[in-house]
Amino acid sequence: MSAAQHRLSAEDAVGWWWRRSGRSWRSGDRVIVAVAGAAAPEYLRGPRLARLAEDCRDMEGDGLTTMLLVDDPELLLAAVADLGLDESTWPRNLWVGTTAKDQDEVRLRVPDIGRVPAVVRFLVLSPLLGRIRLRNYLGRTRAERDLDWVIAAGDASKWARPTHPGWAVAIADECVHARVPFYWEGNGAWEVVCDIEDVQAGAVVLDDLSGDLRIIERTGACHRPPTGPSLAQWTSARRFPGGTLLLHRIQADPDDRELDGEVWEQTPGVG
Image 1: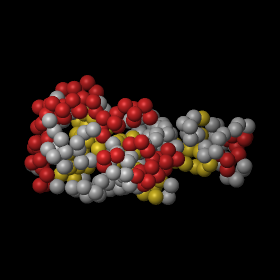
Image 2: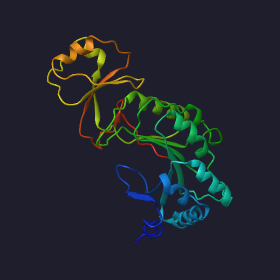
Image 3: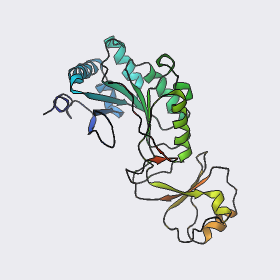
């Protein structure tokens, strides 16, 4: 049994799973500990966090990185303060992140994550369900930023909601400008067919397109059009803003990770 399996057992973690090096993570092994919901106050108490930090120090020589994902960074900050942890005592292989589903949660959670003295502070936007701006949290230097890594993905669940790829491209552009790594996990269960302007102009023939369709605007407004020959007529009778796309529901493919012609799999360059 490895040190990680022994130390971070199911008894200790609210939820955890392995991601071996390969497609998901390029270098080293990651142990992901997700702490959320009613269990968070108990798990993020000072003694438990102290044990996790100690375990991470013990595993540092094994090349293992622990990613602690919390949905309430304020609780984590309180435990950090109680233990007196700072950048000199926080384990380099203990990364800390939070999740967000919209801009309001970003405003609420990201500044607190930025105050944690971890080497890597990350944000998970999965699924990405709207336009989110991160520029204020992506400074060029560590002192200026709250985030050192951004991870995002389309919705691949059974009841998947559409993601406009433009939202992800905008986040990738912000990360590039700030020199912060960006990781796109996958496009989820909706595939772009074409721009709605092409349908309205009769530039594409979609008579044989069946199944579940959506029309999504950059604003997030989503429409469910008819399928078959009536699709072109239905869209031509309506006005849509630029950048509106026609999407088709598909079986989510974990290898479908291309975003605007690129595969984004950047990870922080730290040990």
